[in-house]
Image 1: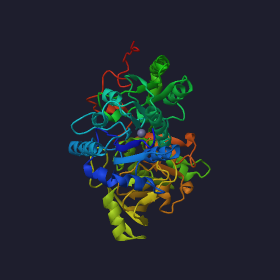
Image 2: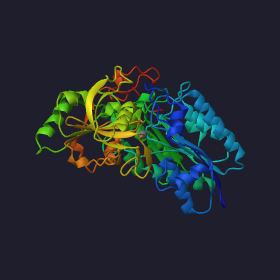
Image 3: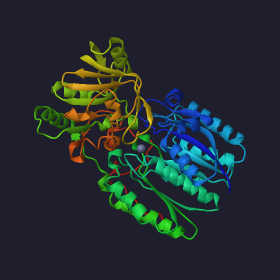
Image 4: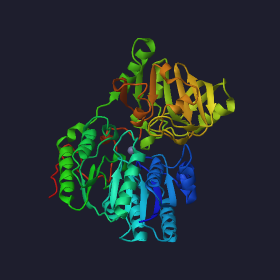
Length: 507
Ligand SMILES: [Zn+2]
């Protein structure tokens, strides 16, 4: 086919059922591009559109003549369920633009896969089905998803293939989108795929879904290593526990070319059985907050000890956390810990006070005054404003490398032995650039406390070996101890919440 016309769409939210609603304004302020704006942004040196959009375009451009048909791309930091009216309005707009676009040869859907809405557990399924309903049964549709997706039957049925990330921290978005582009060209040339989809009664906390090592890494690696000829796509999708949907569960998806249907199905079964046999490896142990703070204190007192990285995994904006819980901060203050850096602390009021006071000012503030509740108290403190920023930063390492990120008005402040980076927008502080933008030398700190679940590992790997990182048990909307959350919609029984869960491989 010469110069195929391929529609580009993106709709991305990882929704934490226990977090406040994600509004249309949240999407629009984060990333919302319509029509040609998508191509203009994607061509910039540091785009705001998801890396998949750029990866898909680049791979298509390199392969030959094609016509991108940009529709609508929107993406937002993980948060609570999307407002139902925004989902409806966005899907309507996409539907209309697709219908008005004229004949299309294929569709690429960029997606996270763990969106919920205030009125639905499966708006991603509605998104896929919308695209299918417009283009009909004969136009290939390929989707990419985050490996924290909760895969619904509707998603699987609506598209030719779902390609999942294979890295956590996520650094292969562009590579998976390139894979989607290659698959799209093969489908345009007449290729057809079989599908196998097995969802497991395993809902693992995200800290056990890393891909450098561990049970999930073993599944992903085996899936790729044992791909027989003709097994075109293997997606092992870890899922997102806090979505709290009936679609939750580790999912295996395999797609085979004609002649490889049996191999593809057999591989899906092999991976499903391995995940079940090794399910105990998905259990979590965290370091107590007292122990973590004691370790930080010792680092401040003894320069011969290696530096320490504390991951405040329970308050990870990258999983819907608020970024403003205070129990770790209060414990560090109470213990008079020295030489520690903490960030990103999300507090627009404190950031605004710092900007009003100016660099060098010594002021009294109250951290988390606006959101004091069971997750974090209001913490009064006397601070010194060290530096200020408008918060627009280009990521340099890990998940946001090369992307423009807007932290909002931001400040670096000193509080006793602590240096704190305060921002206005809820962003996972996973990239060293977010701290270096204030002139901070990360290597000079004895302890670095990050409100991040795991993506910091791809940004701070140049500062910390795995042995120097601890995950502390603190308050927050993304605490990995799942039994503490009032899940209402997960399929039950499910492992590890229900240790006696049973499973048999479907025949
Ligand atoms: Zn993810």
